[in-house]
Amino acid sequence: MTAFLTAGDLRHACELKAAHPNATLIAGGTDVMVGLNFGHTAPSKLLDVSRVPELQEWSRDGDTVRLGAGVPYTRIVGELGGPLPGLARAARTIGSAQIRNRATVGGNLGTASPAGDALPPLLAARASIELASPRGVRHVPARDFFLGPGRSVLAEEEIVAAVRVPAAAGPEQFAKLGPRNAMVIAVASVALTLDPVRRRVGCAVGSAAPTPVAASAAEEFAAAELDWDGGREPPAPVAARFAALVADATAPIDDVRASAGYRRHAVAVLARRTLAWAWQEYRRS
Figure 1 (cartoon, one colour):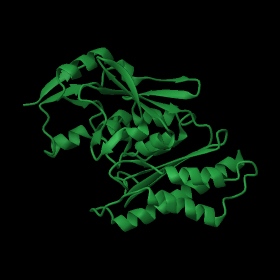
Figure 2: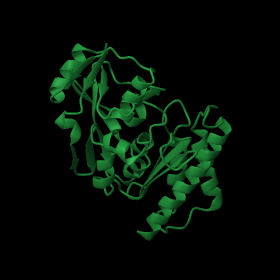
Figure 3: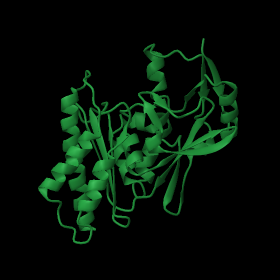
Figure 4: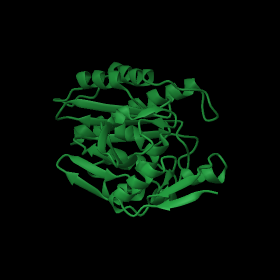
């Protein structure tokens, strides 16, 4: 039988997690309950953090948005499309309206699935993850958070409290490929950000490696090649090289959803498209 624990606030949640390190956190339950219902997981304890008020809040401090881990995707779409357009675009692709009402970024991070739709935008934006425990709070760059499928640097006594995401300094895009347009796990996804002030590009890929990955070489190449002052359309060879570098950052596998070769090709196509869409938006602005 599974024991059920309920936290009233963040401090209480951290105390309970420290006292029961094997407890599985549950907030929206859109991942946890699937595993339970299909018998894939059988946790001895569930720690309910859905009523923790600190996890349900977001705030903005200058150029940074602090997003509580329990803020559902519906609110991200409705309230954060301005400062976090890339994350909001990804949130719109997640499940159905009912799932978006429950599912959270904290759940995506806790599950650490390489197919988590919210994760590439966090890497592309160079977000950091706020981890809380009775020992205090530490911040981990999103690009250093994931270790493998279902694995992260999250210690057994820690809770994902929030993500700190730089507010958009320019256009942000997200594209996802699946066998249908909704209610689907991504075959591949790409998030892209443009920062004209710093002349910096962010690009990350989901569902095409053991973890979400940042395409660092592609970012550096694009940042150096884009015509930031004149706004000239990236020449075809530049766009093609960028797409190839993004694909090179991946390590896809063959599975029931797609072959490794198809995934690599899809990533290149999505990379080229997101760059074109973002650059068109930049030129209009």
